[in-house]
Image 1 (tube, rainbow, N blue to C red):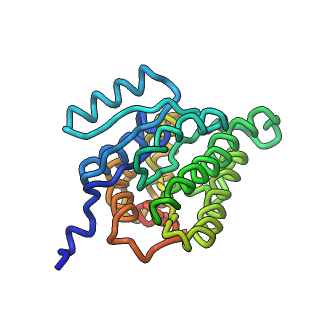
Image 2 (cartoon, rainbow, N blue to C red; image 1 turned 90 degrees about the horizontal axis):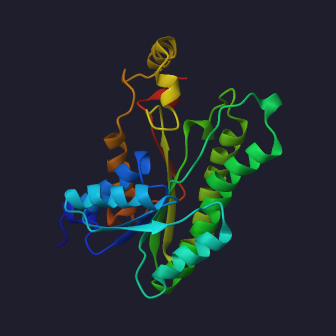
Length: 255
């Protein structure tokens, strides 16, 4: 009989995490490795990737790096060709970018850069992964969404649109690819201090205002996201697809 804890194991699975050189992506890659997965971390800078792989191997993770710019179709094609003769069981679409800008000042170049990375890139990575997973009759994908998938944040028009689009993408692809045994879910981080958001945390007034809205009374720590990612990637979540799990300390429930 399979034990309950065994259903959370990722032993024998191969996971690709995009935008995993640092921050949330790196933390999720480490968590999947700790659960037993072989992890491939993808990013645009070879030096940063190499450093991240060294850190993961310091924790005895089975990890390799993969150059990938998700905003460019040819880069996606080249990167996923690596898995033509190797398994790919898990994809985490984490790569993303943001630039706070008043909506009246957003130009086409800014819009395209953010949406191409956060939404278009996620779709074409999912498509490339699904073509591989269909052959193996199953797999799991996780799209990293955001609180801005659900709420409006001033100065984040392009970012919020891209992250709301990820929720729609999660719903559509989960319905379409379930017949192939592919599950697609999302994780929506609340307020976490990362490279993209650290400028906000330097403002004490902003910190106090945000903390007052979080029922658990603290900002998220990156390790708080690992459990959700491991769970949704594992057999323990085998009947869960098309869902977005918000890891936000209760923020959305309280507004």
